[in-house]
Amino acid sequence: MFKRIIAICPAWKQAFTTADAAKDARREWLIGFSDAENITSDAIEGALKRLREKGSPFMPTIGEFLVWCEESNLPVGTLNGKDSYDEWYKYDSLPLERREPSDLTQATYHTMSVIFGAGMKGHLTASKPADALKYWCSRYEATINKLKEGRPLKEAPAPAHKLDHIRQPASKSTAMSALAAMRKGL
Image (cartoon, rainbow, N blue to C red; front, side, top):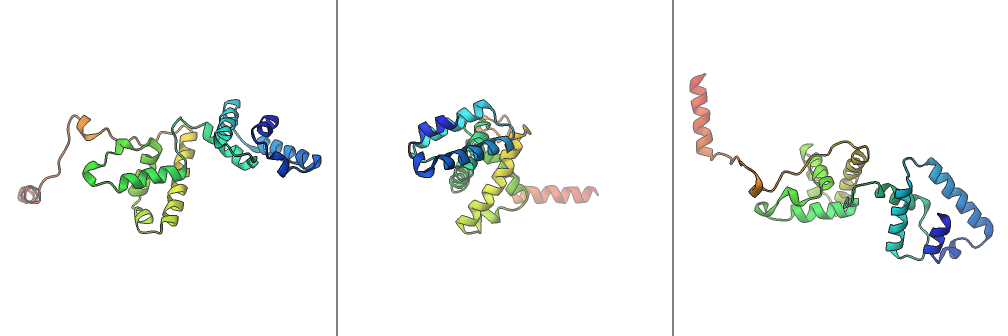
């Protein structure tokens, strides 16, 4: 695998100017892989594919490569933290009548539900953009870990036009009349 990475990244010689430096790097990569859990050959192939797509002539660090291996274990189409935040931000800036939760990826919808359900939306809307992104990514990481463990995530509801029955909130006068009738019955 190390030879394949070197073949993909032709600028590897800049990082390893001596044979001892290359040997030390290989040792660190071996240690990194022995410490990592659940790294399959498919995950390594996925990380190598991502390295080829990146197109950088420079070698990634072992940490970067292991993150790519972990991401390869996720379902196809799972976004990284920044892309998920961008997806939510675009969704949140739409007018209410144009928002369809089913347009979000499952992990983004789950993260949004957890944040909003805990009453923490202010961390996203009232914070500086960098702080909001940092907060989102920390919550999104928990969602991804849940996904890696095979635990279920909250599903986005179907688009409103596909639901069999939609309950509309009552008008204020209808709700007040109903409450008055209930009070009389007590």
